[in-house]
Image (cartoon, rainbow, N blue to C red):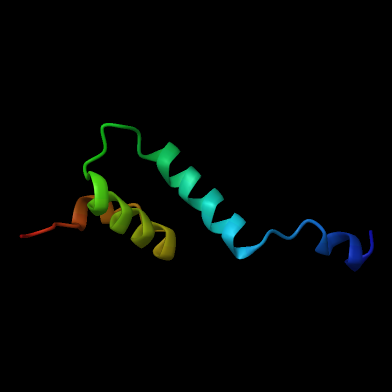
Length: 62
């Protein structure tokens, strides 16, 4: 296989991010411990760190 052929399999950053969010959503079934904007923040934190422990460690305060 040539390097040029491998490049065709590389996803764009947006594709990688979307797939990561899909994986996180599938690993944390509903009902999730966070709703709405809180889930958006926690999901991005998990995406950035690959640390699902953040589900237990994260708290939001008014």
